[in-house]
Image (tube, rainbow, N blue to C red; front, side, top):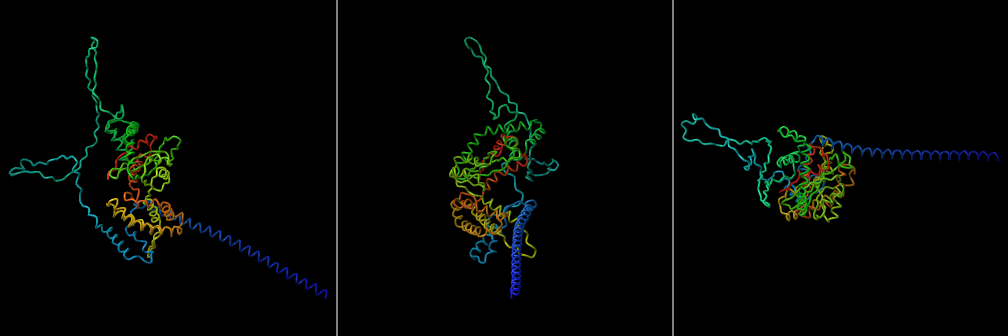
Length: 501
């Protein structure tokens, strides 16, 4: 009996050991499965991030190719105005008819007179010189009358002529009696005033140098060679000193233009980079900036440039000191402090918002052959934006009050739809992708971008300021840089002008 009990215990102990071993094995298997699951999840996360990275890189590569090999125009085709209708299940029939009518009006150009074709005649204000072709006496023999007819016109340019102006000053000698003594006095004729004392160049030559550099983008070293070819030996250092000295003389005029500019209700501002070699405490390769402001009464606006080595908010604070009204800029935050300080209403630029969606459109993969191209989120956003621009083209010639009414009735509903679409789709795109960046910019700038609907005097974009700064940018590609801060500051006189509408 005792032996039976002992054998039973041994068998029970074996069973207990086998169960514990099995449990240990199961635990080990569960632990291994959990570890493998974690490894798979981590690798899945890595693969997911790599896929996102690949999509971003492919998008950037497509955009780079488009920017390098395709036209740079930002114009959009009219068909993109209505792409969002393809993604909607229903559409208001009357609204579709209105949009189709607007599209046909834009495409046919029924509201615009046709441009005259053919050769454009020369301006009647140009001086004219008549050249006569005569018949010989033998050819005119027997004729009862002769007359001349104008056969053609040719534009003729007389090449520049260099001359030296010799100023001769007349002097008169007088004899006066002083205490029974004769004294001679000399009286000299008053000489014409020159803005730069003892300068070797005339006012005409200095004007020619300034216009050639800043209007035509002709660097001073090229002008030096041109003048030498005509017989005038002047170094580029002399030409640069003339420009700097002229800028100093014209500073009072610039101050008056600044006051004239701030007398208006709207100022547009922008800035661009400029390289200055000898800026104190700044490396040669660092960015310095040329600021431009456009404003004043609507019928006579002024354009002013201002050089500053910094892009900080202190520059707009100085340029806009004393101004209160509307300030239209891009999305740069440096203007915000000036708006808060001077109680200025900041106005956004739809060109910059549209440009970002346009880049996202350009970077889209091409549709495969035999498959219809479905509109992307960038396409749908662009369709709303294009409608806003279409409305602006149609109301361009209306009065300020009529523009305000049209924007309230037509533009605001489009803006409301775009806002709803933005809120519904912003989280559905990659944040770092081009479409995601465009939507983020649009969302951050929304309040500023909708201000133009509150006043018919405002513009939908900051294009006038960009157009004002474009000649400077084109000229900069030719003369590349300024040597000193004084030279960079002198650039303002080359862009000094009124903008007449």
